Length: 379
Ligand SMILES: Nc1ncnc2c1ncn2[C@@H]1O[C@H](COP(=O)(O)OP(=O)(O)OP(=O)(O)O)[C@@H](O)[C@H]1O
Ligand SMILES: [Mg+2]
Image (spheres, rainbow, N blue to C red):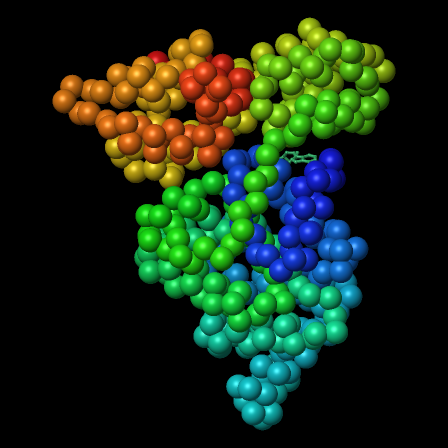
């Protein structure tokens, strides 16, 4: 997937990494984190870094994490093979003292070594080559990996792993880290009281496309299919979508273009019809992640309260103020305090569902999501 635009974000990220910062990029689903990480990976040499890209979503444990890490180093174009060959030799020496098994490869060594000893030796080793460009380790889907660790080995595993990573960041100051994932990590950190393990990371906000970028993206998607967009069609998409997530822009453009005659100009009616179809039941997978996030990351009673806030906001055409929300949250003798409501609203705003408008009322950030919520979630 080629990365459209994101020029400012990419420049800012390289600048921060070059300045010695380690970064945490938590942003809503489908906003383009993975696309951006791949772009960073591809542009690392031009920015005088060697990059390691790890997608840790499907990995089971710490050893798998570092197996991926080694595999990615090995694939690095400039020095990867050399670095891994000398690492295997060095670790082998360390473990066997140059005995008969001194030629063992890193995979075999990893199987038989405790993951922390292996990983520390690996980071020591890659930090050693001071004449080569520094490494940046791009870790995608860290929150999912942590959740997996917890399911397997309990909450202490999250704490141990995060503090161990922090220790490595302190020790190896030339190695840069960028952790990405959909929201939820701060919640996990708070629940397990491990915020301290993240407090040396700088947050990086990845937002939606600007209207200009969104218009350019829509035109580009149409042009790739030999089509053009009529004046005003892109504006209509931006206006109705409200929050310019590249994923939804692409779904709309794809659908509108697929139904347009070859070589034609896609007009306002066609993009509107494509947005109507995006709200059809058969497209529910496109929207599933919004509910999934609430269902997966929030225990009761918070989950039910978050749903109630969203329902109240969705139903209020002019948006909902805190008075209306407090009334909606009051169930019999169950009272929700203003402080608790503020927490719920903060969560929904940081996680991309709502925005607080200048008049103090809360609205859906993505207008199309509000339409979907009203149609399929609200009773
Ligand atoms: N800069 C971009 N240029 C082109 N397409 C993009 C861009 N960003 C995102 N997209 C489109 O949106 C889709 C979702 O992006 P991506 O997978 O990077 O999101 P994500 O934030 O990693 O989502 P998740 O949280 O689900 O992992 C991509 O498959 C691609 O089609
Ligand atoms: Mg992703």
